[in-house]
Image (cartoon, rainbow, N blue to C red; front, side, top):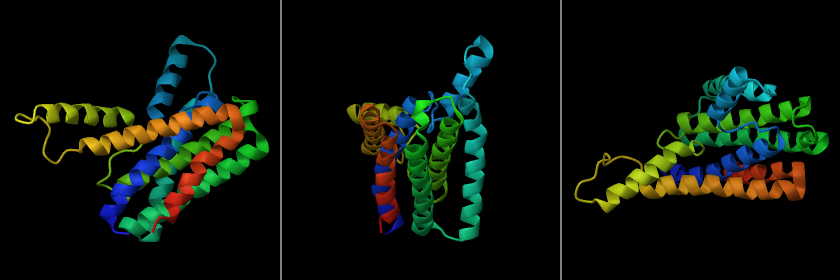
Length: 222
């Protein structure tokens, strides 16, 4: 598939995956943000200053995310691929990580002890999968906007809408992110969050099958 078509079709699907991973991880793995490193930094800082129960996964998610990004960089360097070929390879890596996470969660039931070792291992696997997605967008699809940083997408959506209402005097650059692109990312992420949050109470650790399924579809896009 041409890179431009991939940039148009892939991000909404990745947004759903990101929402599912973040929501499932937060609910089942002791309030760890698996797709938002910023949230873990805030939680770790609050505990360090004000005290309270500390969840090691919230702190370890930060260096693990960085290590995973470095590992993806090495994979990209070794592959020698670019554009859509590189995107497909990194989608395969993300799917493999989510599949490992699903199998591990079904076998070990990490949600039964959200502060335990199994939960920490599951959280780090989810963080690594999301690091792969972030790296994919930066290295393989540089023209695509983020599928997980919703503050930026919400900002783009609101400002783009205001520019449309004031068509004679727009403030955003002409090449800025279109309103529909930001809305697609925002709604995709929210959809993923809602579906995963609702599924946790019904199927527990099997909820990890939900992001794994669209990840398989994304990896198979040709």
